[in-house]
Image 1 (cartoon, rainbow, N blue to C red):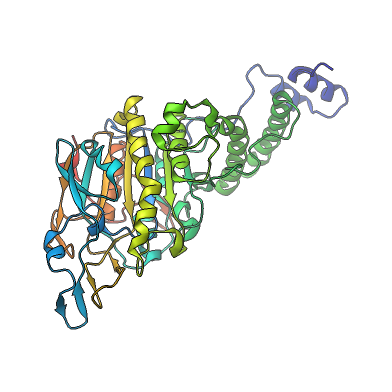
Image 2: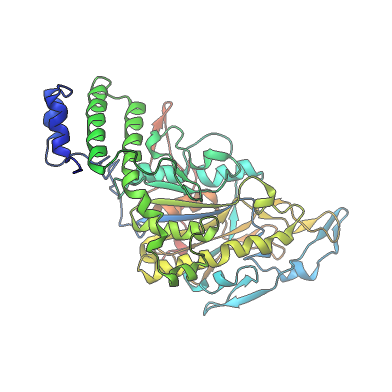
Length: 457
């Protein structure tokens, strides 16, 4: 049986008296609406951006800087000796080696990342505004450790809009809920359309991703009808931002049924690409899948992609109060895929305008309560993050901790500085990107933050 065309479907509905004349004329237009407009907000920037998009890699739980990216030989030399009553020095159990032309040292936990170190700028002087998981996690994501605020991805969505009308500007690939839960990708007082869309690794990454209508033409007719009635409803409620955002969210959902299946169809990827990431065909469970999907999202115009490793369970995150030995397993899960992501982006000419950020909420302390302790406590005074691509100086180390990895020794970079720098590379002045709420203008960096120009090419 021949599938009816879109126009014949509309004429059939009109003939039965189910369509009003005004609606009929809109639906019969040659170019029906296919979702929201490509730009949600004016995408003007005060200066030429180096980055079109961000891929934000967040390691939940607090990765120990002194065991991964910040070699402290003096700490190792004092390992298990007493610092003061009830406090002993704890060195690392992993060796550090120099990599690349830059000779930047990386621990044996991350040999693949070491292999791409000349594309990376290592910041060994990060600090956070809070020392507990919840506060530090929302601090690095929202700029506030105490109050609900929009996440960085939401601010980017608000400031720049989306490049693809059928995909959200902000997407988060997270197998579980991190510390602070959905606040990590929440939009708070920004319009709800800027909230991150969560993708859960597995056979159905997004619920209801496939259309229920028999054909795409029939679905388009139904959506055009819904859009007409929604717009008529909105006209009577001019200025209702919540209603506008709700309509936009439905339009985005409809668009995703057109675009999202293609994003997650890894059958299109070559065997050599899968091997690069260390991904077995059909596997949708590991960080390799998250990284490859992130590249595909970036290719299709998603502005801000966040990949979250781990959740709030200490068995599945980098929280190492009592078991640093689990780092071998955790690092294997992310090391090769992250390095592959950088190589893949570079090979496709995308690393030049894609900013990749690797971070965690804080580091781990260099001191323990007794000799032989297999673990470290929270440490927000200093830790390590790194950036690559989109105008970042590769093969560079910026800032340092002291000889024990306890305090910042030089060039402190706080979370607001990191946020300001990310926005700057996107062409956004962090002091000018504001939103009026509750009688005042808010911004991601609050009243803080400086762009770290020293790491920019």
